[in-house]
Amino acid sequence: MQSTRTFTDRVFLVIKGLAMGAANKVPGVSGGVVAFVAGFYQEFIYSLQRVNKTAFKLLFNGRFKSFYRYINGKFLALLFLGMIVSYFSVSKILDYLIVHYELYVWSTFFGMILGSIYYISKDFGEWNKKTITALILGAIVGVSISFLDPATENDNLFFVFFCGIISVSGMTLPGFSGSFILILLGNYVLLLVDSVNALYDTISDIFSGDFEFIRNEARLQMLKVLAAFTFGSVTGLVTFSHILNYILKNYKNITLATIVGFIIGSLGVVWPWKKTIYKINTDGSHILDSTGKQIVENYQRFFPDFNTQTYIAIAYIALGILIVLALEWYGQRTRQLKV
Image 1 (tube, one colour):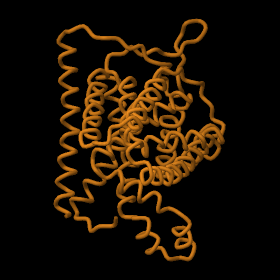
Image 2 (cartoon, rainbow, N blue to C red):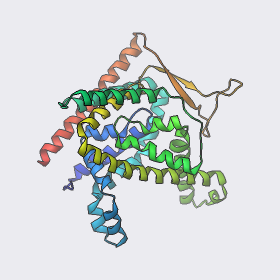
Image 3 (cartoon, rainbow, N blue to C red):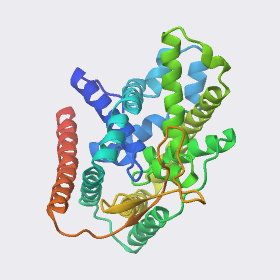
Image 4 (tube, rainbow, N blue to C red):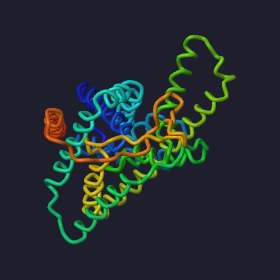
């Protein structure tokens, strides 16, 4: 799976990582879909499942170059670089866009998911009773998840570790939104907003020579939470990659049909026309997170009236579909050039 990458390939791989990182942070959108459509999903899973006993033996024996080559290190390093940069840049832009242009952002994502369904299923010629059943079950699970009520926030480190394992499934299982799972578990704001902001503030303090945060118990707790979440995410990535690699080898058609079902089910989460329902106190006031934002409880979906805003939203849905088709074209062109 290792291959010689040009400078352009490396830049595009970082950009793909940016896209995966941004997608993973948006509830209802799966970073795995980005990997699938952009044509590097199988290499991503293959590289992750190379993190095994052999890899650790090479690492602990000091054979760092062999370890790096064995796990397809250049590919993973560039991809994760993009994801990390995304969490501190692109994802913040997305946060702003969702607040100010919510309908159009969700419309674009809705179109991208529609395009993803077309992309994955267009060459799938193995429809039979088993694969159709897998498709239906995947869709039912996806839709059911979208209508569950979120739990309350919990910063217990063991639970946070579990959240990391579960949420990272969005990177390895297309259509399964890890960030939306975090909302259902009650820890979306804690893990993807508060803890990331705590790390950002800590890094800023260190560079400015201010080490007062050492005495700040709330900040230290947030850093512990982020560490537990990160460790859980890494554990989940490696574990899921091994499981998925085995499943794709032995039950490829059923797995792909289930993935399509998950993606179809996720359309309910990213349906553009929805009213946000916020958590409220017994006195009717809104419950706020540590940043002063209202905490989302769930969404009330509806069909829109046909007006100018609706037509613009439909145009953004078309844009989302075109983005996926452009990614597909780029992926095919890249594979043809490497042959």
